[in-house]
Amino acid sequence: MFNIASTKIDKSKISLKEVIVVSVIYLCVISFILRVQLETGFNILTGDRYDGLIENSLLEHWYNVFRGKSAWNIVGYFSPYPNTLGYNDGYFLYGLIASFFRFSGIDIFLSAELVNIVLRTIGYYSFYALCRRCIGLKPFLAITGASIFTLNNNLVLQSGHAQLLSVALSPLLTLLLYRYMLFLTSGNSRKKAILYGSASGILLGSWLLSTFYMAWFFIFFTMILTIFIVLISYWEKRRHNESFIRPSFNAYEIIIPAIVTLLSFLPFLIVYLQSAKKVGVHHFGEVLSYTPRLTNLLNPGDTNFLFGKLSQHYFSIFPPNFQLGGEFMVGFPPVILIVSLVSLIYFFKNSAFTIESVLIRSLLLAVILSLLLMIKFGNHTLWKLVWELVPGAKGMRVTARYALFLNFPITVLVVYFLGKVARYKYKGLTIILACLLIMEQINLGRSQWLNRQEQLNFIKQAEEPPPSCRSFFVSGQRLDESLNKKDDATYNVYAHNVDAMLLSEIFALRTINGFSTFNPSDWDFGFQPHETYISRVDNYINKHHIQTGLCEYDLYTSRWHTHTGISTLPLKVQ
Image (cartoon, rainbow, N blue to C red):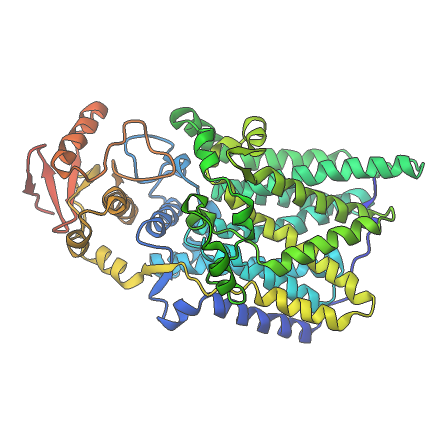
């Protein structure tokens, strides 16, 4: 329909000075993000006692896979069910990176934190490259965009869900897709078109197997964007009475990347389609309860550096049923919203028919439609159409997380608009806006609650399981925690199950325990009421006929025992 190769791209070489400046700013950004870790000598890490350890167990699963100790699609928990990787995000790319650190001798918890750092590094530099090479922005604005994207106010308080950090892959995949379209439509290099198209498919397939939410959001947004590009191009061609340009490309440049992409999707499809049949999907009533109101999207949070006090004052007047905390802390700071609104007016007022204008207007409309789709008005939302019609939508519960992804295209729009403003001799205003846009992304909240040394001690005091053990379950709770949290409902559901998940990967031994996004239909391993816990375990054991080789690990004493169904007896480790 149009030739993407006709766009103007900054092809100038990046100087050493530019590399140094970009890297210095990156170090400032990442140091702020990691301030708690740096202050504690990397003893307090991203995540918490529950979700943090679940992630660690899944990363360790991939380490076991690469060591030949586990099947790739069967994690340690929910024994004897097969294909258990599909009960949660797969964390494949995370595990691949973490395994590099684990093979280097770094402990399981620090390796997980280093994965987060690697992802943020990829996000920062790929966003910078996107701004410089694809959009043609000057270094100052490219740094501004990369800083806004990496600091990301509305992601700070959600970083305990480490899978959401994979939004950092968005600019990298966009770069690959852009290069693919560039070579595809220009006809200059068939090999490069095939290379970039195949690389895009491999990354997207790996992303889906790693963190479903952000990968699906990328696909969904790209679908909306593509529709608008086609519609606006068609409209403008008709309005200007121009004929359509047929790009010159070979069929192999589409067929080969398509085949590679399909093959890359197969592991994801094998795992998650089977899991969906077993455990079902999220009901819309549950999805609706996690759909944000406009209020949520306008609330930058009371720990925002510039607007925290204002937010605390204003949003405190809303009733509790507006759910302003938790998963709903996804609001955008005001300056980026105002600049986005001004850019909307500017780009539609100045609408000359060029490939550049088509792309930017399509991007604006895709963002607007995305926001309209995800907002809840009373108990009604257009997201129901998405949930019913778009494949994969029923696998997601927290619609509010789409706002975390939308920070990416919104930031692209804003820095592109600033580039336009700077061309009209408003350089001073551009600098002021850029500084405000970066500063308002600074959030003083934290999501670092996982005590590394405590968790290392927990692993160290666990003795090796007896050779006769084929699987196990846990009984009791950690001695140093249980006395203070015996009446904590969340603790009594999560803690012992999460401990079992972690130990199952440490010892490469499957456990019947576990807790995930989806649990098996016969899962009944909450600790309370503790008087019936063992009998519920026995019911599960008898149903699945796994009495042989089943061991019991007592979290209270850190010892292995035989299981009789009535009491625990010491089991000597050979």
